[in-house]
Length: 116
Image (cartoon, rainbow, N blue to C red; front, side):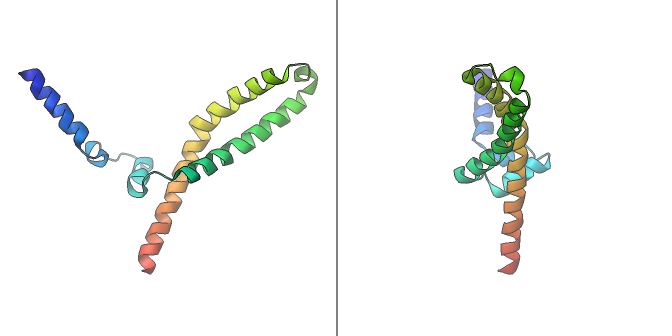
């Protein structure tokens, strides 16, 4: 009987909207809660904006190390470059760009509300 009560409490907790389940503790969560998730087009643009400079830096580094990496097969150089660029972009650059994008969206929404 107790396990049924626990399961019921868990289901009720999961059924609540996300904003009610957990208090908003930092600015990133507050920004996401107030603006919603960005569209797929914005996420693609932010991902491209983050990956392009990283790939450019990586290719410049490979060119600088030309005597060493020049003899490597192309697939191995691409593997090394993407092994550095993708995690750096996914864990460090894109999340920060998403927060900036959502802050900008929230600012635009406030500005629109004030002018209306």
